[in-house]
Image (cartoon, rainbow, N blue to C red; front, side, top):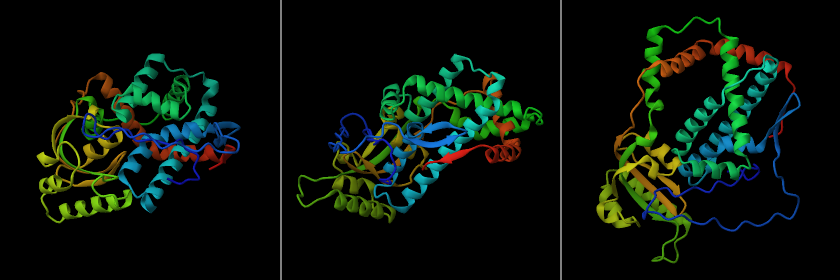
Length: 341
C-alpha cells in the first residue's frame, strides 16, 4: 500500500479458522512524534466534507482482498488500489451532489429498510460476521450511527435517482427475467456457501531453517505454485512442503463453510473456477496456495414480489445509465469540488 495514504492499518484476520492457522499479533507501532491526524479530509463538495474515515471504511474490504491477492504489492496492486479509491471518492462526491440537489424534497427512508441494507452489506462483505464488521468500524473511527447515516444517504440517493428518471420506459418481463438470471447467485444466502479445496501453507518463518525469511518463503511458495501449474501433483507437494494439520492428507479440506473463512480469502477462492490454482495468497503467518475442488453455493431467492421489485430497479438503472451520466456531469460542473487526495 502506498505509505503516503492516511488509511487505517488493516490487519488481515486468520485465513482459515480452527487449528489450521492461528492469529498473528500485529507488530507494535511507533508513536508519531508530531500531531496526529484523527480524521482528515478527502474532499469537499459545496463546503460539505467527505472524510478520510468514510473513504477508508468503504475501502477496507477491497484493500484486504488486494493485500491477500498481491503478497508482493507491486504495480498491479498499486494501480488497482488507486482505481478503487478514486471510484469510491467519486461515488461519495456524486452522493453529496445529489443530496444537495434534493435536500429540499424532504426525502426519508424507513429505519427498517436501513437495517436490512446494513445486514446485506455485512453479509456480503464480512460473511455476516457482525464482530468483524464492528471491528472495522472501530479501526476506521466510524460509529454505528455514523455508518447508518452513510447508508441512509446512499439509499436516499438511489431513491432520488429513481425519481429523477421515473419517466423512463418500464422494464419488460423478459428484461427482468434476464437480469434475474444474471444476478440471482449474488442474491443468495452466502452463509450457506460450502467449499472443498486443497491447500499448501508456507510459513513466513521456518524453525527448521534459520536462514529463511518472509521473502525467501514467498519465493518458495511462488516456485511451488509454478510447479503445480506445470503439472506437478498438488497432493505430493502439499505433503512435502505444507506446514499445517492437513499436509498428510495432501492439503485436502472438505465441505468448509464460508463462515469459517476470512471474508477476503472467501471472496477470492469462491470466485475462482474449480481446479484453478490460486496464490500464493498472503496469510498473517505466511503464504497459501489453494485449488478449489468443489463449490456448493447457498440457495438463491425466488423471483417473488420483493426480489422482482429490486431487479426491476436494476433494469431501470441500466436503461437510464447514459441519461444519468449526462445529468450528473452537468451537476458536477456546477458544484464546487475540492479533492484533497
